[in-house]
Amino acid sequence: MSRQDKDGDDEERGQRAVQSVEVGGRLLLALSRSPGPMSLKDLAAQAGLPASRAHPYLVSFGRLRLIEQDTVSGRYALGAAALQLGLACLHQLDPLRTAQPVAEELARSTGHAVALAVWGNLGPTVVRLHEARQPLHVAMRVGTVMSVLGTATGRAFAGVLPPERVHEALAFGVGPLGESAVAVAPAAEVEAELATARREMAEHGLGRANGRPIPGVNAFSAPALDHEGQPAIVITALDHQDRLSADWDSAAARAVRAAAAEISARLGG
Image (tube, rainbow, N blue to C red; front, side, top):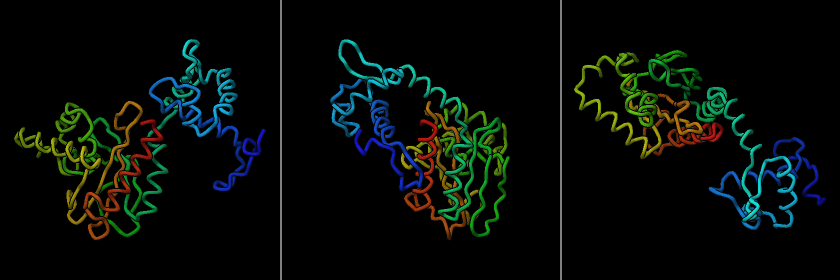
């Protein structure tokens, strides 16, 4: 076995790592990204390995049923054990637990208040809140149900959820702005707001609050998607307008998009 395949010190993490496992893992990751079975040559190339070095790993993975080889074409695909691992991972995922460290880092790195919300029985509901570095007076706490159309959090959900689920929440008449105002609004106005939320999500990947519902406070929200493409949780950054620009390409907007993408990746989205 070459030196590269031996145990080595992982300088970046300060922990001991097994490099041969990492090398073999590259083959499995390459298969996971492929839309179909792969030849040995293509698979090895995707993993950055010569075919002669990749083959012994594939033999071992085959014995573990992590991969399987078609007897006719000779191509490789993920096997039954890989499916079982994937399903077990999905069953063990907890969106809030997964999102929590990402939210903590977003709050630490930006200084903004950061909230996590899920879609509850009454609509967007705050389940975790990290305070801003500088004082920020907002009527938001764990358990707060957010306005669907009047907040960045609500608009992030509205931009990706099926319209019928959004209308169900609007009918309850809850939220800091009071959705009762929406309930009596002309249907055309409500549909226009929903269409705008969906367009903003399609164009920017975000919901935005520009000085509303709290004057002088801006916010950006982005949904993190699970393996079925459903919004598992929404992450929001909010702060005073002097510290958080409402520009769609502001530092805060980019940070929230990146945080949501990281959570989505951890959830298999």
